[in-house]
Image 1 (tube, rainbow, N blue to C red):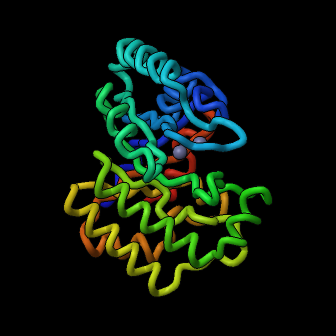
Image 2: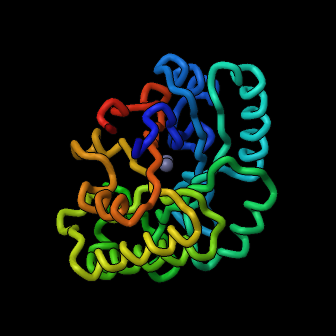
Length: 251
Ligand SMILES: [Zn+2]
Ligand SMILES: [Zn+2]
């Protein structure tokens, strides 16, 4: 089996300030969908200057682990519950990120890159808002994409990651986005670095909702499979009803 459709390895909760639902509601939803495993992958960002905080505070993470352990006690006989983290990489804060990760035991460390810096301000590369798309477009679509993949490669190399999340999410809402030859070579380099570290690639089923196809695109997935990169599934749920969304399409 290329991928386990009974494991949803990427869900968020209200703790990140842009999702809804308590952790327990996600657990109940996963059991209702007959999943065998659910891994929370809450957002960590360090040193990001943005109009709102879309990630957990230190206190939020403490509460998260506490509640997660309670849920493991209560529901452990019906569902494997993992406590993970989706690390948004910030090259300026690598040491702080690594230091924070060492404070807890994680069942999964997902690596993402959400915030691109221009002149001391951060812009969300997966946003559909004009306030992000315009400055990123001005910076140059080709350049932002190249920088995105270069930063992801660095993140794979320096962080203790176990899964790479939404690899091709960069500028997903920008009309000019496409991955040309040089970008595809960057993706190959990322896969090679992942293989050295034993990292898996996430197949993110939120893509079925957004564009009718999983993330990453099929030809990128085919390359990962050909190289032997393991695949794991994630719904990227931001509300309990999205747990395991479109997993029937994974096979
Ligand atoms: Zn999120
Ligand atoms: Zn996520």
